[in-house]
Image 1 (tube, rainbow, N blue to C red):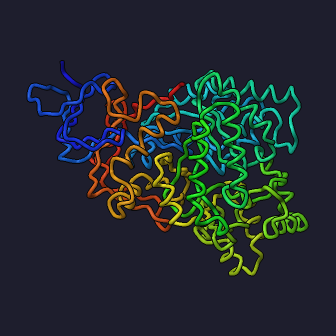
Image 2 (cartoon, helix red, strand yellow):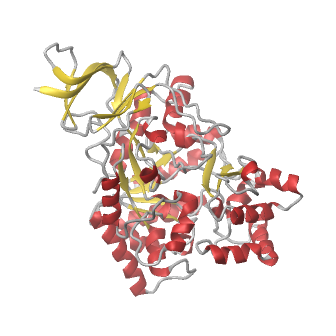
Image 3 (tube, rainbow, N blue to C red):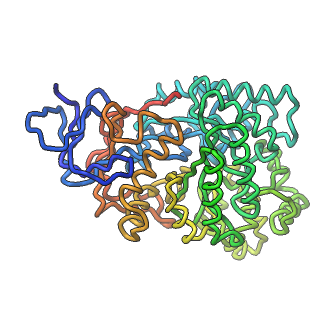
Length: 530
């Protein structure tokens, strides 16, 4: 038999966490065909790769991705594939790109700060049509998507701040079922974002309950990662315990000075939940700053999805004063007040294109306000208006010691949580190489095999991707070759769009999407249907 691909002379790190061993991996028909421990000169392959002693690992799985629309604009997804990512999990934070029927223009405008815009418009409405659109477009990595709470809530209730009645709740649940039947790998929510911020626990539990017959995960940006994080964790874990569904916590972290230094308590919540019989995992990014759409800084009562209504609100001096007081005086209990907990000096503006703000890229709201002789809230509102809601922000509010302690947990996978744009967070380009260089090679916080497990087998299990995450015969031939002595993230907050070093070759279904550190243009990826 002639193999399609043979990667030989490699240190194989198989994803299980077991020690590496020397050998070769043969691929046929997009699957791992064999693992050879000793050289076999009789093996024949159309393509032979001499790894030169570099590491051969399963392709990395981005447990938290925001490439939902970017994949149509750049099917190679070079910022991801060049760091070894072969599978991405979309539909995060409750914002899936489907199902959306009827007049959804305002919601798509609202999502533009998170997912960007799509040239030529959306050609789909249902989840099945979205997955088919991905297939027809073609892409380099594989992708899977969650069905989003915010999306189905908008479809039924719009951005209304109210509790659904029983018929509306059933309509929302039916949309979740529709998404799962079409192939969504789970259900996500983002309880700090409008419209999901208006949902009570009963609503969240009812919708997450649709997962039970499928055994798929409930993935959550919980209600708080700062002041109310303990209550938020309790709510999430209790839902999982009551429903018996797998849980996965997005971007697991502690934000704001009041909670820093409590990572052991946070990890303890996960361990206690598992002792209760709750199947819970998490993911994290290895940076002390987060990123989101700039409108996420606004109080939940501000009409974020209708830009004309937003313009009217933000242009009203009295309304601006109410916004300022809500942020600076913490007048809304339970609201994840990002600017309030980090301070205006820790919030930087990004993805700016307007004449009024283009030169302020990467500067803090406080610094801009000082230079302009304005209040920080005025800078916030004017930037949102000038950028027509598409601006993003980077908020510095995490402690490195907490990141390190959380990373030491074998329950926590790796995810980029990266928003694309003209000036993205460096995690879009550097997350996985940063773990391998900083936390494995330089700091010796993780062993190489442990880090690869957190990037491969762990997220594959958490998301139910049974054919991925391990080097085993019969599984998908998603593979990455990297030099552990060279691998390095070069993306910084000053120069974020910089590709890493040391990621030599990346294969999706046995086809090279990166060769010798450069994208090939091949598009072997697919939209995974659960």
